[in-house]
Length: 144
Image 1 (tube, rainbow, N blue to C red):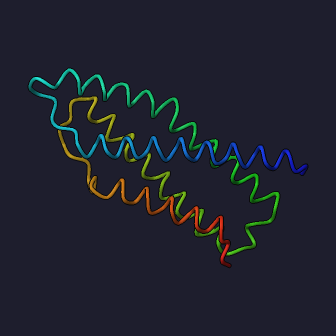
Image 2 (cartoon, rainbow, N blue to C red):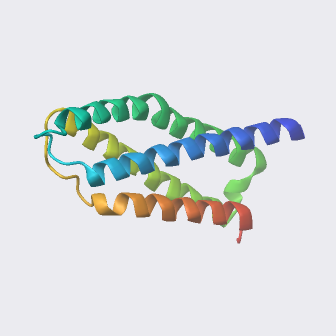
Image 3 (tube, helix red, strand yellow):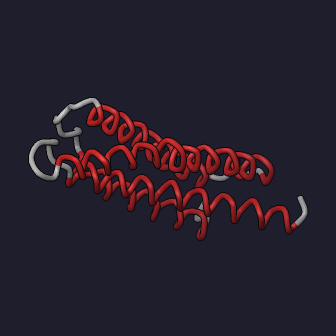
């Protein structure tokens, strides 16, 4: 693979991952701070909920897919699956993917009128930050 192609793919992978993680963090914070949609702030919260659902559908989820596709392509091209660090990275990325699925489901339920608080919502943002930190550490250090 030409060096310029590798650099472009790496840049696209990182940019997509940042969009995915920022979107996931934003959803985490929204779910953590949202209240049942009654009272004076209900129209503002409903408007934010619908905007966030659209953003998740059209930006965050596609960014996750692009991150996965480019990451898998790079890992297969350079034989990284023979190294131990990549499997921990994949496990963290799978966890982040599952989290985005849970967040999307929570947003969908809220848009349908559910006032139920998502399970373990307090852990969404810390998990996102810790998993991202683990991924960055593994990629930079490649410890094993």
